[in-house]
Length: 210
Figure 1 (tube, rainbow, N blue to C red):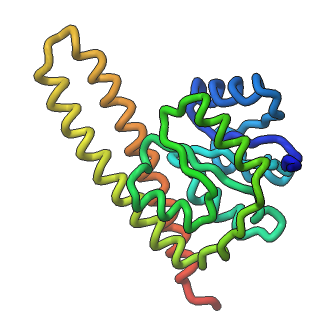
Figure 2: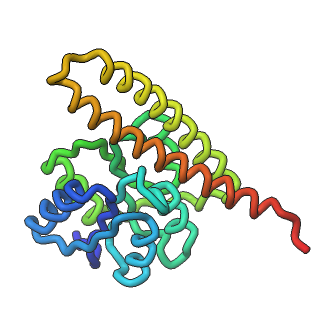
């Protein structure tokens, strides 16, 4: 069975994870291009015509869900298979929303190299799955908002728990929880940024035309 032609596009904003994914795939002979957020990925899709997109979900500027919606909404790119990878959006509702956007697979971080390679090989050599129609923008925005609000509540709860632990654990354990607290706050801020951008887009679309 023939393999799809073109590079694999990896979209990941955390440098060491991006490097790990890139090295793992290149070691097995795959051509790889990378992007650090959804905006860069859209440019790479146009320039590189990737055979596969492997993307994180929680990223700055344009996250994985919004990236997938744009790729699926473009007739020239909608058949590119997308594999989501995430450590944050891993509930059943998250996965169902990802599949509704046309994702062919969903991998949870941390990813074992063997699982990554098997999944990529299966997608690249398998029959092209029939893609669902792109979600209407209003349907996407409602589902996207629900997923973001759910994650925001989860991150706020994690922040409160980590703050309590920073104040109560022995001094030698405190740096680890302070690092966890800082990382969770960054993720919370990214989700809030996505919500603000989404609300801005929705408000703009609701403005009556002159």
